[in-house]
Amino acid sequence: MARPSARATTSTLAVSPKNSRRPSSPLSPFEHLESIAEQSVILDIEALRKLLATPQAAGFTLQFVVQTKDCVFSTKTVGGDRWTVVARGLSTPSTFDGETEDLGNGQYRVHVTVTRAGTYDVDIRLFKCIVSSLIANTISTRLVPPFPLHLTVVAGPISAPHTQLIFDGHKAHSFELATVAGRESYFLIRARDQFGNATSLAKDDESFAVACEDSELQVLRQDSYEEGVYRVTFITTKAGPFNVGVSLRNAKSGATHPINGSPLAVTVLPGVPCLEHCSVTPHTSYSAGELGTYEVSLQDAFHNPISQATLSLQAEGGPVEFRQVLNCSTAPQPEPTPGHYRVSFYTELCAEYQIHTVITGNAGVPYGTTFELPLVPLTPAPGPMTVENCFNGEGQFRGVAGQHGEIRVFKRDRFNNPILARDTPGASTAASSFVIKCDNPALTVEPAETLDGSAYSIAYYTEKAGTYILWLHLGEERLHGGPFSLVIEPAAPDLEKSFLEAPLAPALTSQAGLVTLWLRDQFGNETNSQAEGQAALVEVLSSQQEGSEPRRLTLPVTFADPIRLDAPSPEVVLTSNISPVGTHALSDILNNNDPAAPSAPAGAADSAG
Image (cartoon, rainbow, N blue to C red):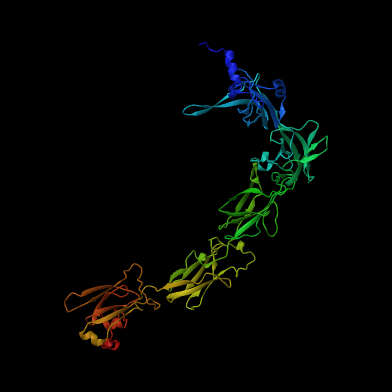
C-alpha cells in the first residue's frame, strides 16, 4: 500500500476537528516551537542605538521592545516566556534590575531605571526550565544584539535638599589645620543631585549664595575643590560660633533654595596665647599645709579669651602637689569668666619655689609649640605652731635633783618648718619668746635664751624629785597641744641621808629579825640610784655563831620596796656603796653614826630600838 503524500497529510490535518481553525486565535505554522534568545531581536534597534549614544541623566529609564523568535527564525505570536533585564556597572559597582512586561503577542517591553552615574552594560536574558526524571534545572540564554547595549548615565542637576555642607575645622588634630581667629579657613559644599551623585553648578545659571549673620565673619571667595565639591574661604578675628547660611541660587529664575544643613555652625578657635595679653596673679599669702591658688588669664593677639586651654604645671625648688585647674569660664559662681583659670596647689615644706605654667593647646588641639607664662614665685610661710613639734616630738623630759637642766624649744609648725622672726613681722620680743610655766614652786624655771633664729634654751633647777607638769607659752599665750612633763629623778644615795631600820630589841636577842635599808640622796629623796661606776647591790653579812664564816646575802635594791633582811644577831656586817666596810653595832647603824667616831654609850641600841 502506497504512503500518502505529504500534501495529503497536511490536508488531512487541516480538516481534523481537533486542529480546526478558530477565528479568535488563528493558527500559524510552528507557533508552538521553543523561543530562542539568540534568534530574538530588539524592535526599532536604530532608535535605541541613537539613544544609547547620548549620555542620560541619573534617574533615566531605558525602554525598548523585544520580539521573540523560535529556532527557525519565525516570529512568535504568543507570550509566556520569562525575560529579565539587568544594568551592570562597568565603571561603577552599582547594578540595577529592570522589569519586563509580557505583551501577549510574542513581544516584551523592557524598562530599567538607573540612578547612579556611570557606564552600564544592559544584559537581557531568557530563562528556561528543563525537567528531567530526577531534577528540574533553570538555564538562561542571552539576547545578542548587533551592538553592545552600553548605557552612559551622568549626574543630574544640583538638588539643594541632597547637597551637603561640611565643616571640620574644629575637629582638626593639629593647630595648623584648625579654624583659628585671624587666619583663613574654609568649609566645603558637596554638590549632589537628587540621587546622591556628585554634580556641579550649571555654568552661568547657578551659584551658591553665602551669608553670615555676624558681620565679623567675611567670606573671601568660592572655588572648585574637587569633583562635585566647592570650597568657601572665610576669615574673622573674632573667636566663637557663627551661623553661615548657604543657598542655591538660580540666575534665570532668581529663586533660592537653602542647602541641606543651612545655616552651617562654624566654630572659630582663638589664636595662640599672646604673652602681652596673658597674665599670672600669684597667691598673696600662703602658709604650709593650706590649699593655695593662683590665677591665670589667657588671650590671643585679638583679645579673644582662650577658654579651653591645656595647662602643664611644674614646680621648681621642692615638692608641690597641684590639686586642680578650675576653668572659670564654666564655673557657676560668682560668674563665668572666659579665659581665666584658678590653679590649686598644696605643699608642706617651706622653701623658695618657682612655678612654671606652660600652655600646650586649646580645645583638645595641641599647639605646634608651647607657650610658657611668667614664673610664679612661691615662698610658703610656716603653719601654726604646735607643742609636740617644738620639742622635736618629745613629750617628756628628765632631769636629776640638784643638777641644773636645760630644755630646748624650737619654733616649728606641725610640718617641722622653722618659724623665724621674719615669719612673724611686727611681734615684740616678749610676745615672740618662749616661757615655760609650772604650778609647783619647787621648780625654778629661767627665762628663755635664744640659740638661733628658731631655737631657744630654757634652764631649770630643783632639789625635789618627782614629776612636774609644764605648760609652754609664747609670750602670754599658752600654746595648743600641752601640757608636757618633766621627771626629776633622785640623785645617787648619800651616806648621811640613808639609814637601816632594825626590828625591835626583843626580837634581836633570841629570834631572827628584819633589817630594812632606806636609801636617800643628799636632798632626802628616796632613791635606788647608785653612784657612777658602782654596782647597784647591797651586801649584808650575818654571822651565825662565833668563829664561823659569816653567811653572805646579796640582794638587789629597789625603789618601790625597801630591802628587809633577816638579822640573827645584834651585829651585822654591812658592805654597800653608801657605807664603809666593817662590822658595826646596830645602834651605830640605826642612829646613822659614823663608824669612825667613838662608840656610842652603852644602852644606845636599846634606846634606839
